[in-house]
Length: 168
Image 1: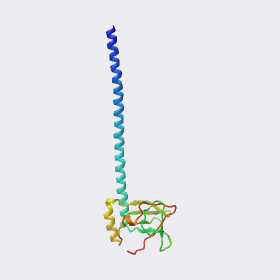
Image 2 (image 1 turned 120 degrees about the horizontal axis):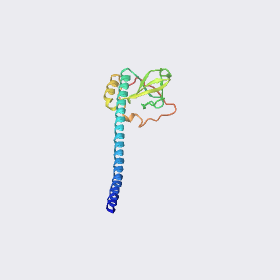
Image 3 (image 1 turned 90 degrees about the horizontal axis):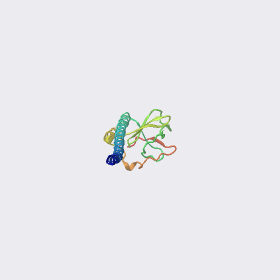
Image 4 (image 1 turned 30 degrees about the vertical axis):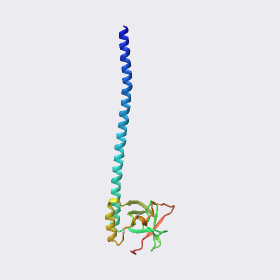
């Protein structure tokens, strides 16, 4: 009987030690599965962002083709990146750009005027900059380079932009 007890005890110890290994293996497998899922989700989000950027770029190019109103920053008279809530002032008329009008700049930004401010901003994607340059050239403009724009948009409480004069 002692031999049977020892054998049973040995089998029990082997089972317990293997059980811990199995639990550890299961936990590692679950972590790997979680990492794979997170990676797939990240890839999916990146693809969606790229698709959204392409769609916004197409929208921006359409606005340029439809002769959006070119505007500059009212204070500095330079190109600025658009931010939601900016106003666009028609300096020739001394009033805001009309409702639903499309405004744009030579940096590749476009927006619609909604309730007197810029909304629905769409920018030209880097891959489409050659198309933008061609459209601007047909309209008599040259695309603005990075040196003519601020490094990053600096939204202020009440930023404004005014239509760009047709001087080239």
